[in-house]
Length: 468
Ligand code: FAD
Ligand code: NAI
Image (cartoon, rainbow, N blue to C red; front, side, top):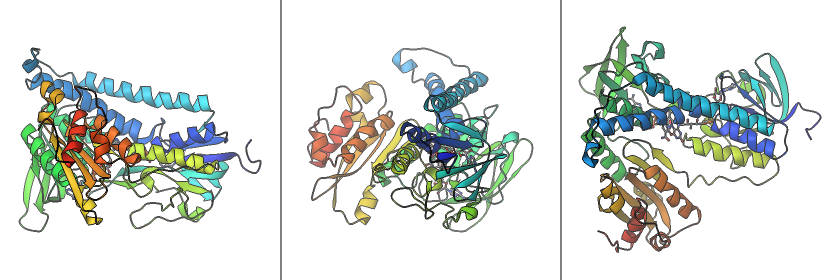
């Protein structure tokens, strides 16, 4: 039963993986729930222009690459691929339409009201959505994030020359030369897509290494693999400007630590230097809220903001900007609102880069573990020595298990492997239950699977892997 004073028990602002999941859980718990969304379709960045369409392009381009680069021929399958980019985009759009429509179905099934339009606060319990004003006892801000702009580099997705991730998902033809600004997740995933389809790709990274935040060994090995695939990686370099004509862009670069300028030409530039929380136009001040110096809304462990009845989750709050983190926060936040105890263990959030091979990790890097004061033992097992990876002609990568030297408790697991994104789930689950490396080493793993490499890396922590 809704509290009679308000139109809704819960109003969620934003229908990304944080917002739509929170709305469904709140409704499942018997709360009268609405979700405001300014986009035409539900699902947020993730379903519309993020996780899903990027994976559709990565998956399809992986097939093309395997056929074009001789990987299939090696296995006795002779094919000469030709690219039908329109059809590739078509299957991307099918995936997006199917899944965003699926959320609409789930809203109807769970009786979540979809309020269409941009939401802004009138006060801490009153929100204007489009032309309508609604009140709610509890409000969850799940407005997500958008691209961080780069000074002197103007993004115009319609012209296809200087684009962000949304533009890079929709290019109507394969660029001859794509320059990716930022060697992070988006740059490497979408750079990989267009490299596989025939573009020369140059990646410009400000720091000394790509993939900040990942384990040092992984960063080093990943750079080697991408270079072998033909992506030119220039670290320690910054882009100071990019000027576009109708068909090409001229970039000005300089060493990150200062030095001589140079120019570089490209027919497509992807700006992927990070994302920033969406709070513009929300009128947070009318609700008594503000953002921190990183533009995020601060919350406590239970996702409460400093204003009673207002909660926040997902990309708009501190923490990694990941869909599964947003989803889990959505569930926990709704459960807290309903008087239950919703918890997210932020120490065990896996992250995956969906390149070929995939790159994944959970928990602490070796560097972070040492910095936190742990004496560590590590075990590493190469995919080359894993029977399934070897048989499948997927020799690149390794699994690394980091354990506390005293207690043997697993602190982090990092891997590069064709199916690293799937393998990392078992590491996350083991860590969630406080596993030691010995626990993983003595768990029976099916043979032949890539996951046996996780077991062997755990055995290597004890210095006793079998196949190495
Ligand atoms: P969002 O998904 O950003 O959703 C917020 C929604 O709120 C949006 O639909 C927006 O329109 C709406 N909104 C904002 N302000 C208002 C307002 N005032 N009124 C009404 N509606 C509003 N993460 C992964 O875990 N795995 C991946 O593989 C992955 N791939 C990605 C690929 C790309 C190219 C990009 C850009 C991101 C990717 N991410 C991935 C990150 C992931 O998309 C985000 O972490 C996730 O979508 C965050 O969820 P959210 O619910 O916080 O916000
Ligand atoms: P990112 O933070 O992953 O990488 C940005 C990179 O750009 C960093 O390496 C940074 O050092 C570099 N950089 C910053 N300024 C620069 C400059 N001026 N010149 C050159 N390099 C510069 O950000 P990205 O790739 O834009 O992704 C944004 C977010 O989206 C990430 O936080 C990620 O969590 C999420 N995402 C997740 C995916 C996944 O889980 N597979 C896929 C895509 C995005």
